[in-house]
Length: 297
Image 1 (tube, rainbow, N blue to C red):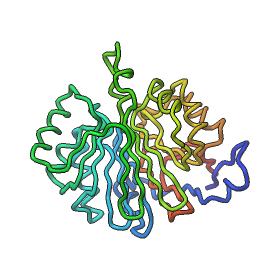
Image 2 (cartoon, one colour; image 1 turned 180 degrees about the vertical axis):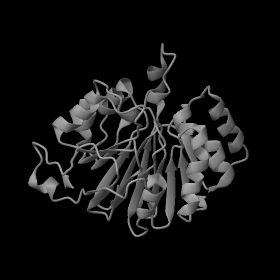
Image 3 (cartoon, one colour; image 1 turned 30 degrees about the horizontal axis):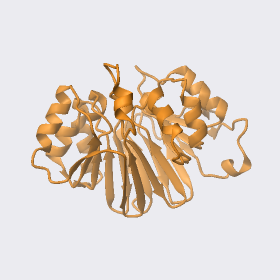
């Protein structure tokens, strides 16, 4: 199998190790995730349908960013335990839609969770209420406002809340997506951006500030749904690789894929299997059975 090269790709970009490895047929997302390297940063985007659940590992430290839908909680916990994980350093719930907070209560019931981060607004779904009930008595749960910076092992992490939440909520019945926490992880020379479900208003708000959004890798917003602001976001981020959390039933919008193709960004999605990103601080390798921009022999 050969990766597809794109117009506008420079020799320097092509020198990066961005290899698409197709694993054996029918392996399933649980088997794919076993490729994690304990001596590197590993980000496993689980294949849980049109939902987000990403496991970040580095040097014995574990983050879980979002928890899929309610029925995904058991699979996420099984995946963690099969990897020998019994404790999460940090659980980040980006926002309170059912496909992000759904499995959080079950994960917290089954796993030791040292710290929890979530956005500063009230959700209205039963999955959110179950999550809050499970949080009762937890001594290290925080609603993030502004920017929170922390480190775990060799990872430098910044968590960005909406800078003007009132402006994003004004006059809207549905604003959960734009309230998503956005997470940046720096590991060695590489930066990784996880964007929750942010939409146009939040993207424009982010880009109006003075934050340096340049990253090497991006988890695309909102399961690959197209938004007119995506072009400006991708220009600011300038990633070499993108991961889309989607499904065969609910795939990424074709306009989003076309935009990524035109810019020359390698794309992987979780429609069929997990996507595993491994980084040694300089080189990145992406492993999956479901690539978007690859050329198949």
